[in-house]
Each structure stands twice: as C-alpha cells, then as structure tokens.
Length: 144
Image (tube, rainbow, N blue to C red):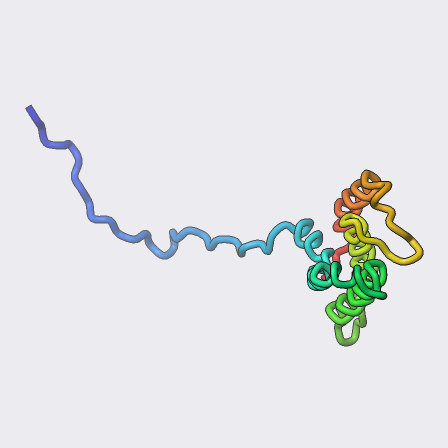
C-alpha cells in the first residue's frame, strides 16, 4: 500500500562562500521630508510655554508677554543648537523656527503684543497657514 519515496534525503549544508547572498544595503535614516518637518518644531520651548501659560495669564507679564519671552528663547535655542564652528549659525533654520513658533502660538489661541489675538477671528486662516507652512518648508529648508 505505501511505497518508498523515490527521493533521498540529504543533509543541509551551508552554501559555498562564493555563492553567499550580497550584503544588505545600509539602513536609511528615514524619509528626509519627514525628518526635516520634525526639526521645524521647537519642542523644548513649546513645553516651557505650555507649562507657564496659565501662570503668566494672571500676572503683569500676560499671555502675550510670555509668548514673546518664549519667542526669544526659540531664537536663542535654535541659534545655539545650529551653531557650527567655522560656519556660524544657520540663519534660515532660526527664521523657520520663528515662523513655526508664531503659527503654533496662534493655533493654540495665544497671541503676541501689537498683533493681538488673530486666531479667535481667523481660525481657518491660521489652519491654512500651518498647512502650507509645514508642506512647503521641508522642500526649501535642508538644514539640521
């Protein structure tokens, strides 16, 4: 009823060194677009702003004053963080971070002195500005 199999079993052996598979390509560091997009966000200052926003609201400093202090900190943090010996500060990186922070402030119903609370009346305009900014900037800004 059962017949013997017409094949024989061989022991598995590793392939010869010459026939080895080619080495895998080096791992990529992620999508350059997404990497640049993430670098636009001054997260350390955003955290500081959020931590003391309600405290500043009840003081002489006010929310607008606190936003201004944090804007200065964005400039300082980005300038120090992008400084390279012999090359200086990445001015474009500092400017991109400034605009990103200002858009973020207005998107979260904050405001700056002399500009006033724009987002309360123009939430659609702020949303469009953020969308266009985050889409376009990584195409012209390739800094660190």
